[in-house]
Image (cartoon, rainbow, N blue to C red):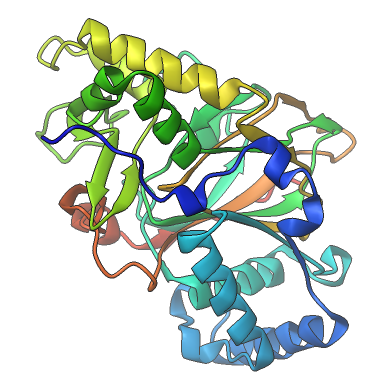
Length: 339
């Protein structure tokens, strides 16, 4: 490959650049909230199951153009947004899920998230142990999650409920991290352009290997694509037949983690019930701080997750395309109720 180079500098930011929350918080107007309510009522007249509702079944007027601008900002700008202004107390969980699904479909096409074919997922304590080699982050409760990416173009979170403390959502700018690594240690950046092993977490195709390889950094048509899940890359080494990480790869991954965790490169946000967060999965890594639930009091952190295929990107590297046909074949929705 050619030497790595600075990419998409227009999308770079540091914590100081985004210190003003109003830059990345889109507050719905009262008329937009009512527009959403009308779209919800129409969608529910078509079907009560989100899987049976298409974009045309969730009609939007003026808000549609605002969401299009947000989608463009996610891909070509800052890469993350918090959408605020839905009155959580006004809607039950099924209605909130439909609102979320409808907004999501105006930002992209839902994408299967796991072997169960979940097009709509749950992020809450599902009783999985942190040392379970097949547990995924959305199933783990209480602990903080390190910065990572997911497996789609856009990743969305809807806050249904919070615990009693903690659980801030954190986002770090992958573009700034990539470009700084190119500047300070191009040999390490180059290593991450080579295929690196990732653990499948038990979700490999039937009869397949428990690991796969994909570069952490990829350039395509002058765009940067990032797939970075440090715990999964390290866990891949439990498979004897997986490629061994080189010393340069270990050093490079460590440096990426250090920069993501550096307060200069990330920002934390509070999501209150009704808030939605959407991020560009290729330009923004996300994580969360540790939190505490109180099940007796009915305070259990619960978010819904969407993976979306954006219409703004017209080309992706092969391994960033929506090709999990074995996952999508089982198209379903996770419907946990925890409060």
